[in-house]
Length: 269
Image (cartoon, helix red, strand yellow):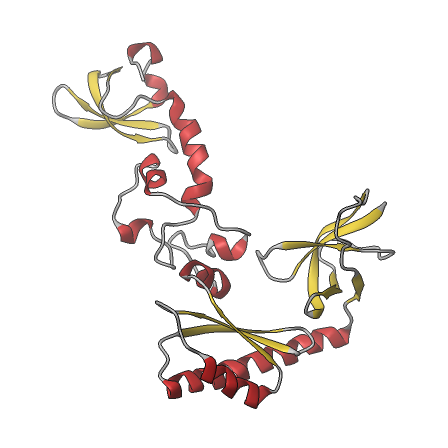
């Protein structure tokens, strides 16, 4: 049996499993772990649990030690080097007149490698840029082009709901989002109303979709005729969150009726 613990390196980032060995770890503990890029600084999100190793499984990287005060100071130096690298790279991009949007620079914990994240409409020839970066920093350089949704996840921001955007706060992996999900919630199909900071359909439509589909099972479909306390009416819209149905009465008046006042026997879905 080996003890496995889940470690995350970024907020809402992927959780990686590590062999915790003899360390007694709790959720929220900061640890130094072995990675493909050298030592890394992460936070425990899943406390150690025992598993039976399988014969064909690749051995897990180990938790090297608990984080010390010097490691937190190293994080401050790492942030400073990232800011400097970002400024220098942006100046180089302007000098070379490259059509790319640099938005983040990430350094490994030991400072042996810099990764530059950018977006662009197409392919970018950044060979000359890499040469300038290598001459300046004298370490390994990686240029990584990502999509607009990944940019929003890495940069963060506030959504139209007033909360931190979902992809930055808790979504680990992007799922497919379709316009049908917006229709399921009876939302306006105006792109400015259903798009997130990235300009794509809002991620929240995905994990809200099943809830709306479940709630609407007991509701009449728009266009159907139902019986209400005020007489026969045609269903216009559904407000499943508030438990109400918008209808048009035979008199032409539009009103909202609580779903419990529309008897199921009076309509068919």
